[in-house]
Length: 281
Image 1 (cartoon, one colour):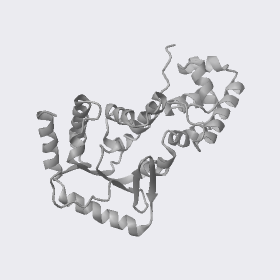
Image 2 (tube, helix red, strand yellow; image 1 turned 30 degrees about the vertical axis):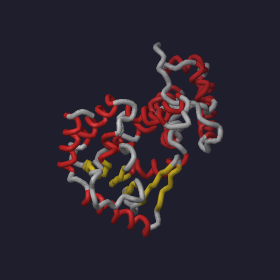
Image 3 (tube, one colour; image 1 turned 135 degrees about the horizontal axis):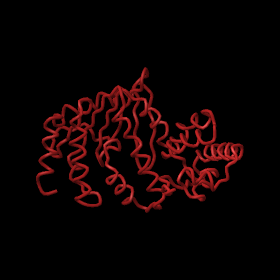
Image 4 (cartoon, one colour; image 1 turned 120 degrees about the horizontal axis):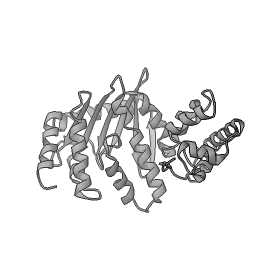
């Protein structure tokens, strides 16, 4: 059977999710031995190398959701491994983002102001990879691969039914910054144009020369989970935090509304993106 390259990466030992992954790996090993499979035989059934299978059992690699589905079936786990699917999936994200990722998965409303880069939910795989690659100090390729995979997994929010309400205010300068190359930027702008045509998504451009601008405090995200109160998320220099206190969330909600009023309308924003694509980037 053709081996499938594992899309996840070895984790750093200080990550607090390591214990969960080690425990999950031990469960797989116990179930494998009970089912009478050698590590090599199970790896072959999954299309993995024996080394990749060993890394999963030792908690050094994150099993993908479809891999967990197959393992539960092959090992007659009766749902035991499936119950760990979401917790294991969340370990793909940096520790500081996991709380936000949980909320994002359940969000019925998602609104983001982006001042430095395209919001993660809207990034193409090529744009995300380029962004993570240009960071300094340089990250190992395995870590970049894991981060890109985690970011792309977030895109399921865009396709969820019933569809959540999504809006984005993006600085004009972000749409002109060719991370990696003009080719990468062009692909990203084409993706924005496509996503922006969805009825539940509104993308607005904040003109660089706008005199009135309420975003001086930097980028932020507002999310409302199903049946819950809105929360805010802010991130800077590799750290992030979820804010649930009503007063600061209320302040950011007001600020976001003003930013939307100051930005180009969604229709004018899509026309602006189209104009960028037709010109010299």
